[in-house]
Length: 399
Image (tube, rainbow, N blue to C red):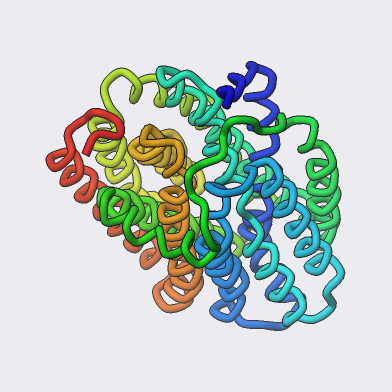
């Protein structure tokens, strides 16, 4: 069968826009979590169940549904999963009780798989020497979606209420779902060898992980990173809107705007990793992230000083994700979606833990607890990155 056509530059950037829209939905809650808790009359600790179940449902959805990407059209699956996201968002928007809102968020999480199908789809349509650059473009789209979600959510909620945030999100998801059939070309010649029953496809995850054991280390690194990211931003939102600090949700949103810098820097880090190797680059980034995160504790009670560690985290944090993905996206095409399944499932399992920790730790220990939790997570990432580099070397995809 013919090889799939390479993506055009326009298609690469349109896929990045799609990645931004479908990713944003999980992050609208971060600046407004206090407002949502007050609306439904629940405690700070209990409101953490919303992002926690969202992340847990996503991890389950990834394990149960994402492996289908190695058997069925990535294009068709992406469109189906986006329809599921639309349904979850509409339920959240219309819910008048806390249970309905939680249910909608959980449905949303279960179907938020498009951001993880898109890199696998693109990786089969780019030249090997451009893999890092194109992966970074899609990652920049994800970052931009997170940026718009967190900045826009805080500002819109401050002026128009948090429900308006979800009305806008629903409209954007419906629009991108209708556009995806035109953005993603039909697939020809990309069928994998992952045939057989659905259960056999799931069972194949075990042997694949056994033959590619580094994916477990990669998943642990990203699980720690994503968990500390969520815990930090949930704690930060509660910290800044507390009586002690006295800021509104709009300020939380403005601080989230620092993620804009990573949209510009991440493609550069991807090209750097193409040159020096992803594992070596990841060690540098992890050490830099740990150093920046250490400033959260002494700078946490001054809004202006707090910008320094947040800026550092936004510069190097996404680069760790890019370099970690490169270690398995350079392997055989028929393995990539299932390896992505393991990686993303571990990532969102970490996110679920971070979602609970973000509210529970803050309620128990305040901002100091949040800062120390984030620092310990980053130190763990640095240690694992160093061990992986020593074990596997610095060539992408080479065990």
